[in-house]
Length: 174
Image 1 (cartoon, rainbow, N blue to C red):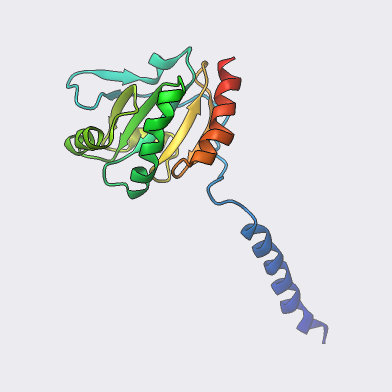
Image 2: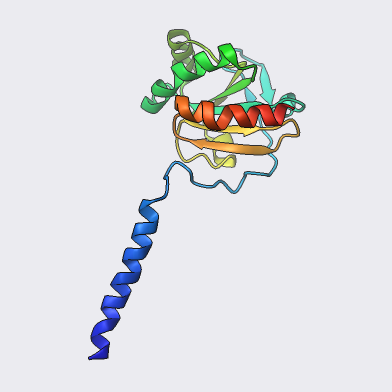
């Protein structure tokens, strides 16, 4: 008789875990890189043959690394927000054109606007892999010492920019 309660107990425990999981925000997957130095990289600059850019070029500045691609539907959602964001927020944004053809990335920026101070090419996804990118868009806020302080999975929303990113930028820039 008591053996009949074992499956019922297991089922109850699974229901509790399911209920806890349903209360979590899936876009807030913690990154193991938060609080650690950003991975080193040197990459070609989009549309500028022979020119390279390194994360070391940004030391001493708070900046945002935004991964995007011309084939990314969610990036099309986020992009106008970033274009507007840079007009009122003095923050350098480095675009990481992820797994994209260079010509397609150039056309994308010409068509939708360019919020980036630098745009680099990650055709083979090596930089994205080092940053633990799950998919595009993803963004990383990096402080003056080169430490990752925030990760946004998926497209930014107006609320995320206003309520999370801007206060953290102000804190890090002071």
